[in-house]
Image 1 (cartoon, rainbow, N blue to C red):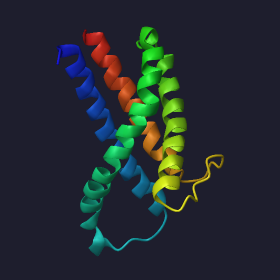
Image 2: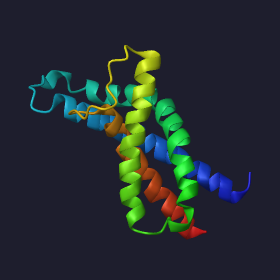
Image 3: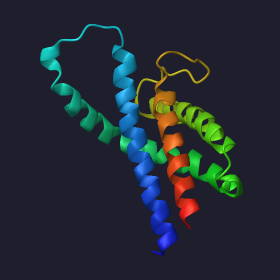
Length: 145
């Protein structure tokens, strides 16, 4: 594997892990916001973050591969422009919703509504950090070449 492909692969996997773990962290924060919690169960937070983050990794990787990489090739010439960060954020949110819709209908109960924007929207919770991580890390990688 040549150096450029290895570097892109490293950035891809870093973005996936950042998206998965920031996503599960945000999911825990927004779903329990304002609700009382028992401090004796605080020890479960790192266990839940580790387990659910690891569970989310293949789905985040699939979403970034299906939705993120094709758009990256389209925007390659403009990768250093500031506005691409906004595109990455919006596209991350949209592709997160699409990916969560697909996963929900294939593996779970199919209750996720693609056209509804609710709090917390788990597609956005995972898609936004993944898109921004991919943009920031890939942009830095391209600048280093």
